Length: 576
Image (cartoon, rainbow, N blue to C red):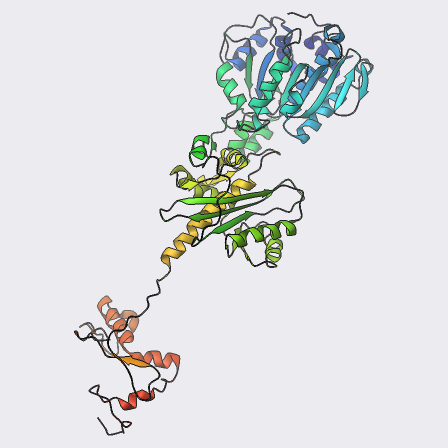
């Protein structure tokens, strides 16, 4: 089905009464070239053809209007301004949508930002475009997030949520900073989920709808990276992937801005301005590793007697977006770490109430102390002190715990509970290589990313391993074994035992042959002489008595002769 627009996007960008005042500068010619692709206008200027081939990798020019466009361009290239203009044109100027609607059906243009902050930027761009008298006259009602027009269409600006797209009669879906959307396949509003919901919503649009997704590049993961590999340089596809650095799309971008960014953080600047996929960001934990460590359909383990449990919490204030998470773990004799309990309290909450609840749970597992990172350690430590379980800040950071738990997970020596939140957070972690090749593991840098449960679980794994290591290094207490017939010695404080028949072992080790001269300083001793001096000190019990004080009085010694026989009377000064 075809539809002829009342005015093309390219013409609207050139008309001073519409978008011409915003896009009138000659530096916007790359974006006007993209507008021609959307309108299906042939490219006639050599620079336009050269730009298309350089930014798409294609050798053949498209012959039909482009309805699916993946826009990968650097920061300050003008993506949000162009997308806002395309959204307003599609909703208010393209056609009279009432002629294509059924009774009660709407025609909505959905403009999605990566988060609320990004959505507010898009909203301000659209409001600025609608201030021109000609466009202002087309607005029927505006509530900030929704703008309704006289032709029956509406423009909605929101965050990337699949629920906002699903079940709608959309005529266009536009997304900004899509490389920074959730990429976890199990997330409710991942990038794949949002696009999957957008396609059916535009199925009944007369021209098939318009899908524009733009972003600066990020990590090599998700829908945008997959479409770049699929569409870039593909002459057979009707869809196009546009790939360009910031300076190509915005010739007025100062060079010193890019140079300064490269000097501060080369990896980040290469992605944001030069449009080079980040190599320093890697997937930390593949989903198959996490799933292989998961005990499916097991959500919690009951406490077992004679088992030493440890606990780790990822604390939160209760007023922000972070959860207060708890994990309890133990180690089996074979060295495997088992996660027994995972708890998460999402905001808003009162930390004192959560701590009291967790303390009761820890008591059932006989946990004697709880570990955590240094987040607000003073506040949480004082609150935990009101309960039997003390709070101990951990010297290792959350990133250190992730890196330490990685070998355990890769070796399948960890047993995780069947927890969807835990799997999603573990698989979304990103590994970053910074200055000095230092590795850091964090959650993705967008507003909806969290790692509270993952931090608690990996912290519990490392706490359990450290507790087992300390237990292995502790000296074993050996109970002395006495043999022989007990008998009471007069004046003694306890029964004594006759020695077992056998060789007499001297209590002091013999001194080595090498002894230093009396006037030789200890600092100049040879290794053999130092060994002689060490053994002499160990054998000389008088040194211990001098350190500890006066030798204690032992009355029973007066009843023992030098040959070991027992006297009936105390031994005198001259008795043997």
